[in-house]
Image 1 (cartoon, rainbow, N blue to C red):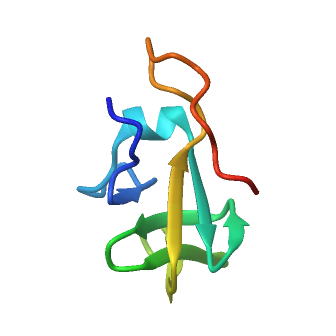
Image 2: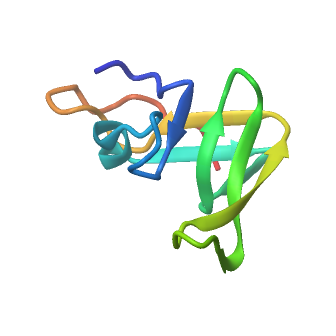
Image 3: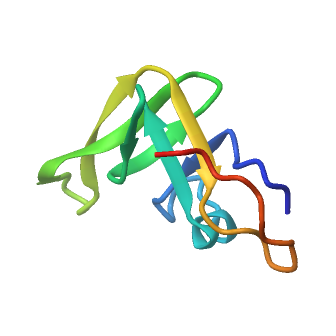
Length: 92
């Protein structure tokens, strides 16, 4: 597995952009210069994230989300299995 996170990733298992192995490594997200921990989905190339709208859910029980547009940075928080530790992580 590479040290570059996927261009698009979702935490929803029903999404075609869901990747369990990437999520297990942990993904750090910085949006508009601020680290975020509430991101449901992101797209690096298009420059947006989706975050939950409070505790509101749709009729299927999935959280309602809002799309925020701006510069997005992503990185893995842990190295891949078998990879050598020591990779530099972006500063918070």
